[in-house]
Length: 491
Image 1 (cartoon, one colour):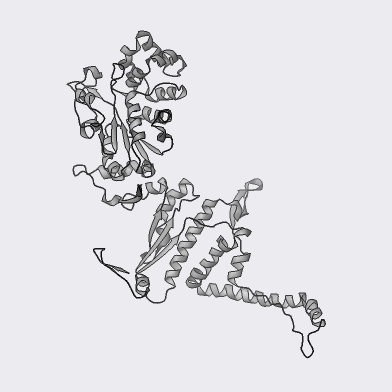
Image 2: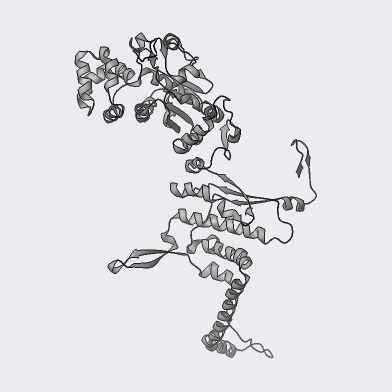
């Protein structure tokens, strides 16, 4: 068929010859039979080696190819003579049984017929050579059969052989070759460990290059965050199911604010180095710091036990540590991917001079996410007055400290103390590194000492202590945020 530029008019072609001169598509499917054993003779690596031998070696080195064929012909002739001696008694015995009157008994002859195809198909086996230290440290080579190698390396061999055979098939075409050659590889990461996945994405183009440059365009379908991390943004086409439809988004068309020229570079580096799993998540959580990141898995597990929040246990949730000063930078990518996202940040109250202070004395906030994005409020009073709707924007919700039992914390640690005064009083002695500071605050009145204590607690030490002693309560603002995330549908 022929499609017009506006993609509305479709014209049927009388024959496919014209289309074949324009486009060739080769596919490496996800279901790859790579075992080289007796039960898979029709689809093993030896057969692929023969295909490579026929399509590539014969073209690249005709003299070497003919030398192999001549050697096989000579071997077959020599074996035929030996077969005559081996089966001579049998052929004479058959003749003695007689044939109908007037008929001469046929002379049974056994000939050896050898070809590269049968050699590779039935008699060639792949071995993997390696070295080990023998006596007195001398390196000795040994060979291991195919079955002792992992499926990942077999899978890699299979893909490379297929790529070579596709290129050889193009080279062997007499006359005009296709103008566009597309190779589709489905889930190349199958059985490959992360290091090989990372290298694969950078080497795939090199495998298709010749003196004239790259010969094909490769389309990869993947669920590998390692491949995504090293592919850059522009080549990615993101597919997401929305009800009964599938929506495709082109990351090369990611819309960014005009006033932030460095934002694209920031997102590329951050996602490549840290959180490429965003592309495969059902939902996402962006947290302020290390304590929240370390404790969130426990909080999610606990919150999933509550009625209406059960989905938290069955969905893949990506957790990213971004800090209050950077969370708003992720707005373009969250909007683009349409992933339900919860941003857990701090109220970060400051006084009239911009210095941090308890929430009760606070006038404004230093948190860029709260000021610039959601809920776009600048004063403490405005932030404390925000309802659920004000904290939500599309598929994104922000969660920051709220009043709990008459107290409102500035940071996670302070809010945690207010939410767990009885638990800390009863269990502080069980904690490892933070028990001394907490005991001192308990003796002086924990609620009154919460602001000062929160500044003394080592963040990672506090988180590790809490991981080791479960049973505490989730601060209210995080509980509310997780409830929203659980009940917000994942498209």
